[in-house]
Image (cartoon, rainbow, N blue to C red):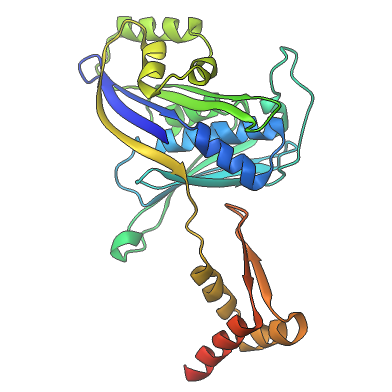
Length: 298
C-alpha cells in the first residue's frame, strides 16, 4: 500500500511531506490506458495533488486542474482528506518523442496553460460553501515547478517540490512514483534553507530510490540531507473513485421520464462511464423499469 507522511524540521520552521504513489499510478494507468509520456505527467499531478492536499486541514475535496494547449489537453486530479485520489486526462493517447536529455517530454505534452486549485468544504456536514479557487499560469509544464509556483504566488509559501515517475517497458509499466514537498515557514533559518536547496540540487533521482525500495522517510532524508525531521502523521493513500452503480442509477433517473423511456424502448438499457476512473455502469431493461416505477410513485 502507498503511504504519505508529514512532519516538521528545523524546530518547526519547515514543514515536510513525502509520498510513495507507485500503486496509485499503476491503477490510474491501468484504468485510463495512458501513453508513457502522459503517464509521467499524470503521475506527477496525482502525487502533487495528494501532497498539496495534506498541507490544508479544512476541506472535503481538493482538485488540481491543468487546462493546457499541449497534446494532452488537460489533467485533473482530486483528493480527499482521508488520502484517496482520483483523476483523468483529456487525451490519454497523446505522445511526443523524448526531450533532448532523453527524458519524457512532459512539458511538451502538457504545453502552456493555467494551473487551478479548487478547495471545497462543508459537504460532510450538509453545508455548501463557495469553493476557494486559486490559479496561476503554468510556468514550465514539468508539474513540480508548477506546484511550487502556485504555492509561492497563491499561498505565499516558499516551497520545494520534487515529483517523479519511473516507467518500464513491461507490465506493470510503472516502476516507481512519488514525491516530496518542503515548505519554508516564517522564521526558517536562511542557512538551513540554503543547505536544503543545495542538497536537493545534488540529490539523486527519487524514482531510482523508490524503485530500490525507499519509503517516504527515505525520500525526506534524500531531500533534507543533514537536516533532521520529525514525522507527525502518516496515512495510507490510494486511487479510489466515489462513483457507484447507485449514483449511476440516480443520474439516469435525473434525466426525466421521457429520456428514460427512450433508453428503454430504443436501446433496451443504458450505459454510463465515469470519467475519473473509466468504470462503466450498464443498466439493464429491468433497471430502467425500476427507475420508471419509482418516478410513477413520486
